[in-house]
Image (cartoon, rainbow, N blue to C red; front, side, top):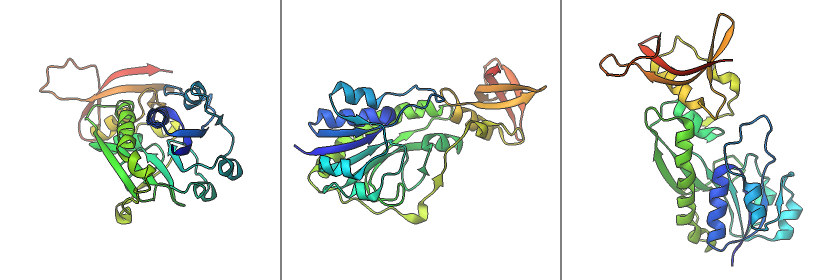
Length: 271
């Protein structure tokens, strides 16, 4: 039976850890994160899942000595939020593999789904790849795409990403455990990288197009911090919008003119 050390967080972490356990992988140790009290916790708990299976779980900084003492065959990272030292990754003879929330080499970095929705992409997905010294740059073992529909929020898309990650790991696991998952190098000419988003990034620029504003709103809609604007000194959260179509039978809600059209404000909140 192959053994593993798993670094994981969020619902993708839970989904992929569950796949390993279902497939009989001996998960000897799990590293996860303490939840941020300032963050909305809408996702699954890797900590609780590991504990329920009597797996040792740690939330401190990863230790090369501890991981080497565990002597894993393979290391996995599933939505773990920190870079892992190469000395730790080299401790596993079968390699170290990460589940990333985009179709690499596009959207390396943080908040992949949010950025994809914000940029008006029609596809998102997950990539299982070898971990390397540079974030999200290792050989690709497998990918699975999901659609992004025009009015879907980042949360809607993320709910598709969760099962896609499980299916992808399931397909690739035999090759990984048999040492036959060399993968394909990424095309660096196609690589894009995006950083962490903050609540302040949700401010709406009304000089932009209706589509750009709509994309921002759905990219940061609940449970994320939200898009916002100001009126008469009051902050207004914009939670749901729609591109206004005069030919539709929809009864318009609150309409705002943008640089190239009109956007409907369907849900808002004064805070």
